Length: 449
Image (tube, rainbow, N blue to C red; front, side, top):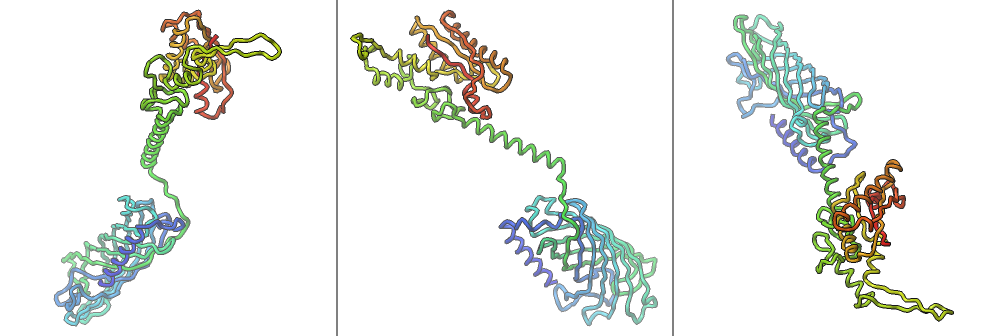
């Protein structure tokens, strides 16, 4: 028993060290095979009943003397990752271990049929490549007892059939792809036993019960093809739900962190998602306009620096070979017109939607401010769609987008006669397979007449 205890401590220590690092993926879990065979050697010790004057323990030691008196061979069938069944055959030989006990010698032949429960899988403890496996087993046993030698019993050599139950635990440690070494600790309980473990025979009227314990060290080896267990449907559904939830969270985070106008403020924090590139914005992504005249302050400073501080600067250009001179006027107003005509002021739309998105309302406000400041100007409102879908439908969608922008301006006080709507249909200038690129061409732009 001392040897067995030391082996168990050694195996548990090895499991701890191996569980701290990944196992080579080429080494497979034993439970992935349908069949395995077992061979074990150890000690069987009768606990009760004994006749007065007979006993199996050594009185000179605390836990008795270890005596290898048992051999077991068996086969195990794995029904699932959690449950297996095994049938085994065994032989035990009982003798006295102490001179103070009367001498005896009894042989037992036994067979058991048991169910096995994989504790690792039940508790979801460690991964399936773990070197250590812990099993619980329980079932039924049948055995025969036969006295081999006796000086007093008249029934020497006769056999008795006993029946009962058996249960125990089996720690296993994998040493190769298919092989484990194991320690097994089992307790047998017979409910019909007239022989005592020392070979004495009781009358049939004395329906005795018996108990025996067994500790064995052995080797188990898998045979047959590797089998891939099917995961329980509930487990699959649970894993799919977790995966979908994780994908949704990642998608939401990616969407939140988009920066459509590249102003350094993520869309989920950006109140003005179409700010002009290079123009300073505040923490909400809104272009800075302290004097609230509808023109970002940074653009105003650029106008003043580029076109002088006066509202209008006259330049005269002499045409070669002609005494005639042409006057050219440049101003803030001219620069604003050029910015509008070149598409810097844009209104964007969602897929299949003719309603401007919330972030684009500032673009419409910019045009409104310009038209009110320049009552003699009129404007073309030009709608676009991406290439996805039917051409005729996209043509109508582009026109509906332009009309909706016109309605906003009219309701804001601009005369409808100053506004001309045009459908430009599909914008084919971007890669149709790019979601982000398509979002840029679902738009309305403006041309000052």
